[in-house]
Each structure stands twice: as C-alpha cells, then as structure tokens.
Length: 304
Image (cartoon, rainbow, N blue to C red; front, side, top):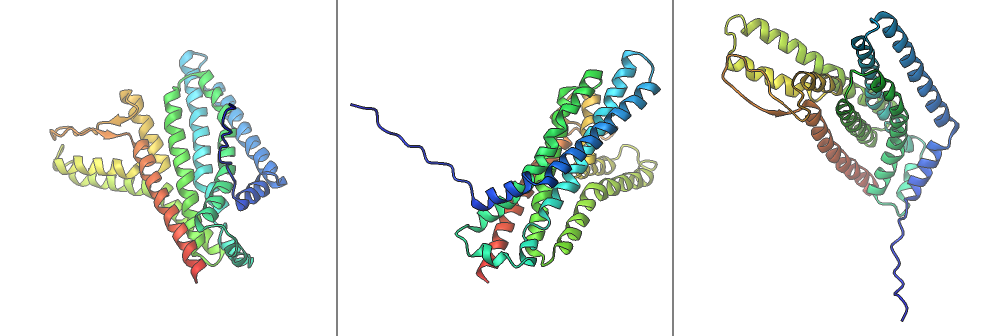
C-alpha cells in the first residue's frame, strides 16, 4: 500500500503584490537609489572614521571613541531612512492610483481591500528594509574599533524597524484618505516631523522649564520627579530620543530592558521599560490600528 499523496496548499502571492514588487525592485531607479545610498553612507562613514581617528589619541580608549562615533552616525542614517524615506514610498500608493484613474480598475478585481493594502505596504516596506539591511555590514567597522556592544545594536534595530513600519503605514493611511499625492505627502511629513523632532524639543523645553520653576523652590519634590518620569516616557515616542535615552541608561546601569528614573530625595522608586521597548510596543500597536483603518477606508471607497 503506497503512502498517501499529501498535497500542501500552495502559497499564492497577490497579483498586485507581484506587480508592485517587480516594478519597484527590478527598475533602474531601485538599483540607482541603492547604489547611491550605499556610496554616500559608506563614504561618509570612512570620512568620519578618518577624521575621528586623526583627532583621537593612539590608544585603546581613542579607538573605542572612534567606533562609538561611527556607530551613532550609522544609526542616525538608519533613523533618517526609516522616518523620512519609508513614508515617501507609501505616501502616493493609493492617492496616485486615484490621480491616474486606475483605482476604479483596481476595485473591479477580485482582490479584497486587505490584499490591496497589504500589497502596497509590503512592496514599499520591502525596499526600505533592503536599504536598511544593506547598511548592516558597515556596523562591523564600529564593532572592530570597539566602544560598542552588540546589545546596543539591538536597541537601534528595534527602534528603526518599528519606526519604518509605523511611518509607512501612517503615510499609507493618509494616502487612502487624500485625493492628491502632494497633500498626502505634506500631511505625512508634518506628522513625522512632529514625532521625530517636535517631541524631543517639547520634552527638552518642558524639562528645562520645570527644573527652573520647581527644583530651586522644592528640590526633590514628588511632582518634579513624576514630571521627569512623564517626560522620559514622552521622549520614548521619538526614535531619535528613544535611542539616545536607551543608550544612556544602558551605559550607566548596564540594564538593557528596564531603567529606574532617578527620584532623588523624593523617596519614590519606579522601574519602567527601556525607552526603546516603549517605542517599539507603542509603534507596533499604532501600526496595527493604522492598518485596520486603511483597510476600512479602502473598503468604504469601494462601496461608494
């Protein structure tokens, strides 16, 4: 008696996903963008290494300082890529279909709204992840010089990937609600700038104000300590400040996953997740909500 013929269900890709991925990955523009991006990042990394090496003493500590500078530069480039390049690939994903009068044709296919949104997201996010992964070998230069631990790379990668996903979905949702690509792009970058740059600036101004107003009059007060904890949580919502704060707490305490705010003189003790964990969790939850809202928006448009 022969063995039963078990047939596993074939994994079928969405036609629009195949079309979007082929058009984005195989185009000459993709090769050009990838080559230019790697050339710029690699060239600046080498230049930064040479400048830092020439300005640092020829000691182990000097080499570690150079490695730290190169590491933070590469992390900063990845944050900028995730925050400002990833949304550019999805800001016109749906609004451009509407401008080109092809959205009605897309609605007439057998694809569900979820499949349409998923295909648009994966095609754009896939190219962004390609750019991010292409720069990972450059981190070996920082590790070779020292001054950086692999756990610090975990902090950066969690923040970068969560930011790329959330900002790409944010642009996709705004694109589904906007009639023009220009309006979707401007709205997206206004929100992204507010999150990436506005939150750290507001937290810095608020911290300076509260320190000048309360600490001289009531040093170690409970209110000032709680306000400082709230500001720490607030800066966790920006990828730049979340990485900086997480790296600072890790360097000071050696704890990767948690940190304890300093409530000097107030008698309070509170252990919180590290800022990069807060950002990753919040951004993933917001990404799920944005995905559901985008699918619902596309479905509503289809029913009109």
